Length: 90
Image 1: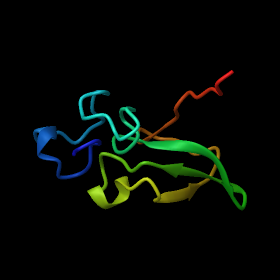
Image 2: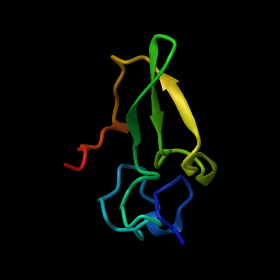
Image 3: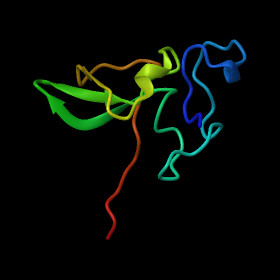
Image 4: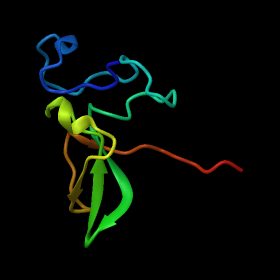
């Protein structure tokens, strides 16, 4: 089941840019866009860096794995890094 955008994805129609959200299937938890499209900042810290997860539209499908992460300087940015709002259940 395809749940995220990645480099070489035929559904991208040759596009090499950020893709619209909620166009792929929802993942196992019913959430959209948790893999691919943009890296997402996570609270996890690796030394003085933060961690990004999820893979991006510019990478191969290999990097879309849930367990794959990359450390990144916390002040870094770009057109391939985003974030997700989250809240705890009350």
